Image (cartoon, rainbow, N blue to C red; front, side, top):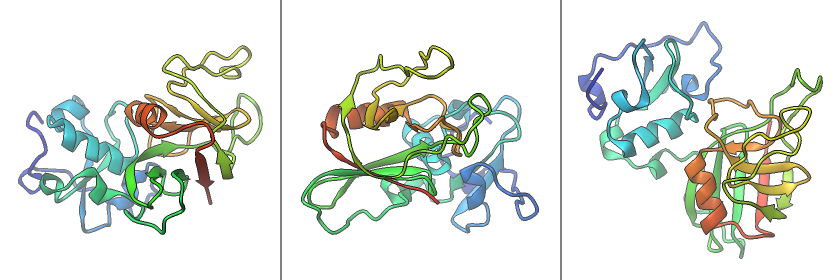
Length: 228
């Protein structure tokens, strides 16, 4: 498919039935939602040739909570009103909350999303996340993300790396990391797959992590992490 999917109704999209199969990726959960159309990726498909318009491409990536390369068989959900919406229209959080008198970052590992709220309770940005797996074979233990209320204790630039993973010496890229508890951090990643798949850190889109790191988060900014 060469043209951008800017008029979803005009395209011959493959409808996907997910009633009999448990959805693994977040987007598949939206297939029975009347506001979305689901499409099964074919050989030769890519983000850029399905969605030439960068803004629309970004919205679909956020809806599906993923930025990984598309492979045949992956199912993605596409808003039927893609032409007329922006990314705030598909946010899984309220745009306004009761003011808390301070800015804070909310992370919800159930909806695989984060949101930044200012001192007056206005959402100023949001995006996808991928948290810790239930089990990590390399360490032989669960590696769930630490949940609760924390404060950012340190942040680094694009060159931030893990001191632990991969075992045994570390070195995994964690661009624009923002540590909030022990080795747990919010950080950018090119591997946000639409489900929880990290060693415990909160992966974000690279541009989202950069925005948070450079324009929103200070040392001691509140981070609230929720899970099942």
